[in-house]
Amino acid sequence: MKFFAPLSLSAALAAATAAFAAGGDASLLADAKRLFQPLPAPPSAKSDQAELGRRLFFESRVSADGNVSCSHCHLPELHGSDGLPKSFGVMGKVNPRNAPTIFDAALQFKAHWRGDRETIEEQAQKSLLGPTSFGNPDYATVIATLKSIPGYPELFAKAFPNEKDPVNETNWGKAIGVFERTLPLPTRFDAFLNGDAKALTPAEQTGLRTFISVGCAGCHGGVGVGGASFAKFGVVSDYWKETGVETPDKGRADVTKNDADLYVFKVPSLRNVAKTAPYFHDGSVADLTRAVRVMGKTQLGVDLSDKDAASIVAFLGALTQPVPNNFSAPTPLPDAAAHK
Image (tube, rainbow, N blue to C red; front, side):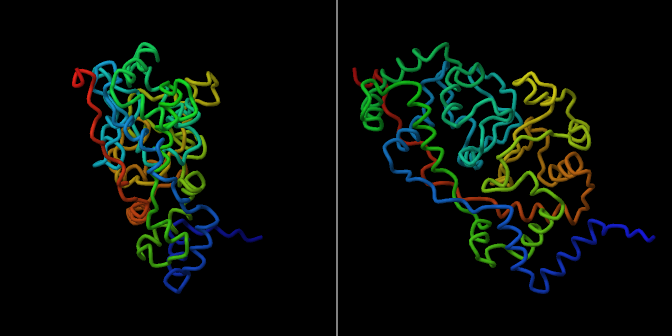
């Protein structure tokens, strides 16, 4: 009996690349459509709730020190992230985990790295009391501040017209959620998925094939190219040995108190990943190529070659969206003192 060794990764990728060069575009597109979905049309950014949510997203006066807003950790110039391993919140306190881009939050099945918030609306609401985010002692303090700023009672009433007392923490979360759902915008990869074969360069198409062949799409699929499941960080090898972290984060186990969730985190969306370093829940890796190598090693047991890592990085660049026009601070409402 003869035993045939499977094709090596490099041989398989070489074959795939040759197929592409020979005109395999249709095959690549078919594989991509099986694993990913293009971005649906976003809701209107001009609705009353979206306009209120935008204003609240950039509002810092409701934080305990008057300096922190949602935008404090999600900057337009950094594609909705802040460029820090771990963000600084109220009173200069350090958040326990990296702040990912807000551009893709609405596409993901839960909020936060450990999935301890079910929705972006819940995340926005509960952040008001977060000790390292807004730092307020209770919602009553927040609501009193909002009601004291001329203009907010009218804007809440306009956005939630059927409510007797619309200025409340639930509507804070709802409005910000509506705003955040307007932020994902189509990329060149979406154009490719919609049938435009020229939307990706040859290098990016080869990178997409590498991404699929290596196994990255097993977790990073769907419309978000991730963000739809939990996974252990370190399926094959301990993640902290690859990233150099001295004290590993227990991940979801700290939320569920279940040992089966040790080192389990939400699989992040890879949309905009080329613009949102540093990477992972702890911001421990600053370089995207190195992050790709860490994932290959820890999740798939693959030592990616320089060529394959660079190929994947080339594809990831096609997941970058434009910065939304409405992702900017509106003219702030004057405080109460200005009306005295």
